[in-house]
Image 1 (tube, helix red, strand yellow):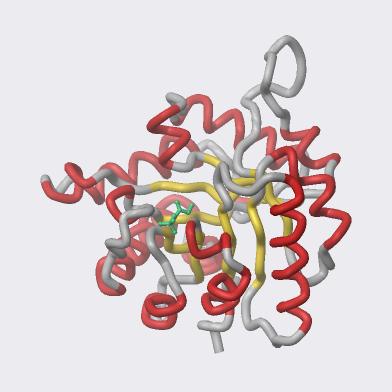
Image 2 (cartoon, rainbow, N blue to C red):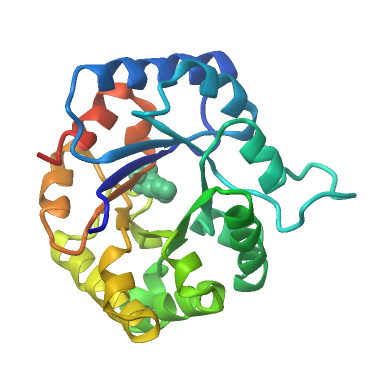
Length: 252
Ligand code: 13P
């Protein structure tokens, strides 16, 4: 059966010393709880190798927040999937709405990123989600379906099974305006149906679909109680070990 996962996305926050301290704090806190989910932190590229040294990877997974759509070469400033993997990271967040919105990421580039991540044994945490206008005009199911299909549906069933999805309605990110647990469940169930039509029931049932967008200790329990919500991708609340752990322990 699919895994429950709580993953942090630190975004462009923390200096290296701050990031190491935060990773250590999460790592320490995990020693004292019997976590009922996999726990991952997604950290800036600059922090990966150092954070990898201070965490127990049996208890805490490590991820990058992006990787390049090329393997290597003359792409100044880019960081490739092999580079990410060489730090010890085992996950990579791909297709975050901030990357789509501010850095022009498209399904075409994301397709390449997913392929390179998988080739390098990185588990993609692939983000999808509609903007407010699409929620309001009712096109949100079509938008999310297209995001999944365009970037992922050329994968074999075996490769698709390695992907974690994160539904992050853009209007809920960093706004304090969480989707209700019913809104999350409705979309997650829909996404699972879309997967089932393409890859069959077994693959669909085994795909973890996380919710992201103003997820906090106070709302995590209700969200995670929904049958199709398999955890969370956490922004702001992952920058504080205590609040992040408050979400991790929402799984009992
Ligand atoms: P917030 O939890 O800060 O709303 O961010 C969610 C997110 O974008 C995680 O990737």
